[in-house]
Length: 296
Figure 1: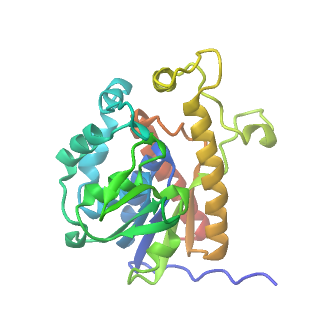
Figure 2: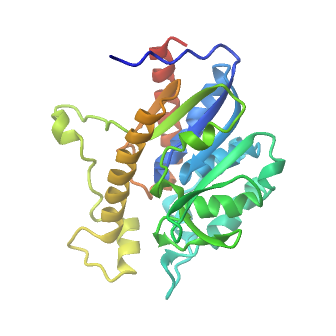
């Protein structure tokens, strides 16, 4: 017996968004939101994990356009200058410089004052459970939600050290169900990879490695890595993608939303935040494809 197709979303019907984890790929969700609004969807609630929380929180604060313009203007060097390496801490990067730069554009309102219902999903490693952040300063919640273990130091919120929400909930559908909206759109950041021309699907499934990439080498150098071997950063990225992709598939199977928008998992490497303009267009294109296929 096959499950019934989920009901379609009526025009102007309030919808909630579940925004997934995916590192820099998460910037594609800017294009997703802008395309949904252009098609007439009314977004009334968002839950996000990791970079999905970042984009969702900025949108809920009403600053998505300013954030997009700022990210699209950033070069690789600009991104590097926003990172603050730390020594003797449980992570390579402190994250304070990054948060300060972004909060200058977005501000730092309390979550409960935002015009759109917002939940940032993080993980409490000590208790081994998800934490849904729905109150307090916005950037405390966002900083905790994108604290990739080993890369960013954990962040203290409400007396608990929290890390990246993508560890347990890379597609936070359950957190989004708390909203008043009756329909849910999920953005899966681990969609089927793009297939290069002439490459069989089974070969194209694995995204290309970025050996020799200056950003990857810069971080690996701080860990004593060798330039002639696959480094920590690429291994970490592929490991996260593998884990989060499997978890996202389970979440979609257990609680299917009315619409799923799939972002190819090889759209970029998880640290390539300087490719914002390209990634926003990927998000727009994949949203148009999903909406057209569903008959919206």
